[in-house]
Structures are given as C-alpha cells and as structure tokens.
Length: 270
Figure 1 (spheres, rainbow, N blue to C red):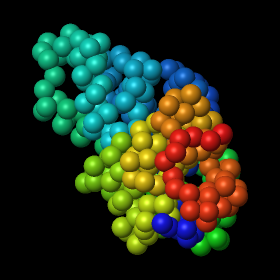
Figure 2: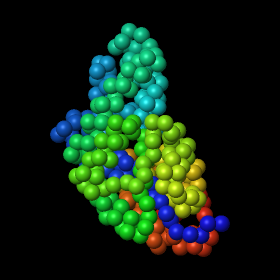
Figure 3: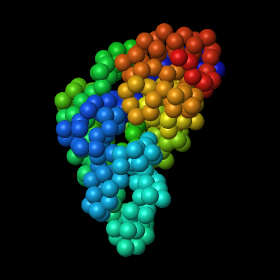
C-alpha cells in the first residue's frame, strides 16, 4: 500500500486553469455568462457556416469529451440533425463530420487564446507555484485538439508564467471518461502509482477520468462549467471552489490520508 508523497497534479484547462465565468455579451451576443466559452464559440461559428442556429445550452451538453466526439454527439442531437437536414437538404454524413471538425480546428485555436478566455482563473498561478515548490510535478489534460491546446500552453507560459511539466495527447490517447489521459501524464512524468496523483477538473467527465485511473479526484465547482450537484454525482474525493484552494487541500487533507494508508475513490468530502 502506497503511503508516500503526492508526486503529480493533473489539471484540466478550460474552467480549471483559464476561461472562467465572465460576462462577454459585448463580444458574443449569445453569451450565457458561464465558464468554458471557447469550444462553444467555435462550434457556434462552425454551425453558422452551415446556416444553422444551435444555442449555447445545446452545444454545452457533451462538454468534456474530445471535441470531435463532442461534435458527433451534437450532430446526433435530434434538433441539430433536423436543422442540418433542413438547411443542407440531406442528412449529415461522416464526411460532413470530418469537414466540420477540420473547420473547427483552426477556429477554436484562435478563439481560446483571445485575451479574455486565456486569462488564468484567480489563484491558479499561485496554486501551480506552491505545488511545484513542494516538489510536485504539474500536468495538464484536455478535450481540445492539438492546435488549441498547444496555443493555450504557449500563451499561458509566455503571458502568464504558467507552465506544465507534462501534457497529455488528446489526439491519440482515448479521452474521458476513460483513464488514459491520466496514464499518459503519469508515463511522461514517470510517476506511479495512481495514489501519488491528484486529478483536478471542473467537468463531470474529468472526475470520472480521475476515478477510473485510481488517482485522487478533486472537483472544482465554482470555476468551470459543471456546478456542485453535478460534480457531486461523479463522486470525487473532494469538492472545492477552484484550483486556488488545491494546495491547502493536498497538504492538509490528501497527504495525511495517504500517510495513514488511506486510498482514493471513496466518494466526495466537502
């Protein structure tokens, strides 16, 4: 039974590190004031290219999965599929999915690094600095395609001084709710066992990803897209408002539990 230190913390991007809650209705007329706007804005633009009007609430439904799968789930939505058929005169096909996702890639890569969206959520920089000072490596995984996450990582490093020791490859590694993005970060950081890892996320699917990997899971209920009740249903080990409070949680709660021989995966604690 592992009773050593936490060695790796893996964070999601949108709603966890950046792209938090804010009102951008002066820029986007349909803005709902919620976090994780980047993919929503990009998907809305793609649908508009096809003369379709898909509301933000619908676009948000599959949030957390790799964005090509996100797009597929949207096209499978009855109302969205009906709109596509009406505007294009036929049902959508796999070729349409490929073409729309090809348009999405460069679009989302530009959207996510706009000043408003790439701005770090309060306390994230301090969180990363405190964890790294304690000898803990910082990883990141996301459902974004390569163009988007590389643009975000570069901008966060150059403009905000936030860098990650390892990042998962969402293009080739099976994503949430499977555990493999966590394992990808663990492999690159040479960190094991999963009990030495903390996965922090604002999305239900991200919590499931952490739980299935065997890592400690922390849901951030006030910074991202999914709130307290939805994250609670995913049964994280802990629920806290945002990454700002993560170092204290690790140092005063998770690490002592590890030293007592406790293991993750027993459900949420407030």
